[in-house]
Amino acid sequence: MSRLIAFVGALSLMVLTMSSFSSGDTTKVEGIIKARDGVSMILQTSDSSDVVVLLNDNTEVGQVQGVLKARRKQMSMAALVPGLPVKVEGDYNAQHQLVAKVVKFKGNDLQQAQSIQAGMHESKEALKQQQEELEKHYQALEAHQAKLTEHEEKIAANKAAVEAAVARFGQLDDYYIFDEVTVYFASGKVKVDPKYIPQLSALADKAKTIEGYMIEVKGYASSSGSTELNQKLS
Image (cartoon, rainbow, N blue to C red; front, side, top):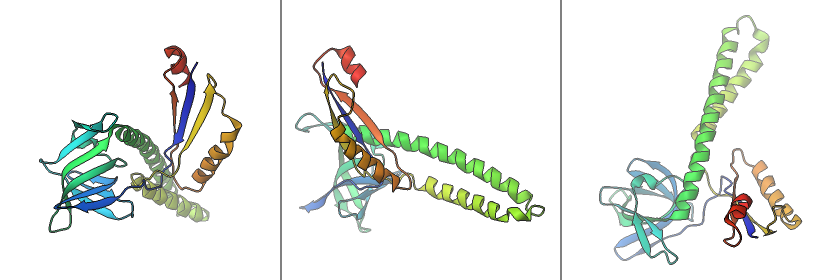
């Protein structure tokens, strides 16, 4: 038998706790990638300040590995996606931009950031389709506006919906971790213990107060017990 651990997490719209500090001639900054555009990215630190980081051919990108995080695997710059917590070492240029020498991140952080990016892509596609449908509807109503003056308010409402959809579409990359809940299950059981219901309900209530959000659910089983049963529980 095994014990299942389910992680309910990753609500949008909350900054991960990071920090920045300087040591000697080289500046070291920790934060979460807020945006990425080619060879530049915006890093948001724990005090909510934004740091512009420049990447170049000499920038080393590495994924720290091992129990003590002592080993580093060289990675492509393509791995530096929005939502990824990183540590950057480099020097500021005359424009107060941090020219990165080294960018490091943890493997499990990359996996979570990529998962969120995949969910955001699906949301973008859905909003894009909704935007196109609303735009078509608005155009059809506009063509009949001369004859259907009584529908003017409806046309205005649809136009506002299109503009709102466009605004939301453009803001999907601006997300933060808001809250998470860990639920422990009894050995071999899949039913949620009643004591966790208030925590899960509170998480759901927080989601209702947010304009756009995504909830990610992860399940893990312990290494004991049969592989087949553990996979089924997970």
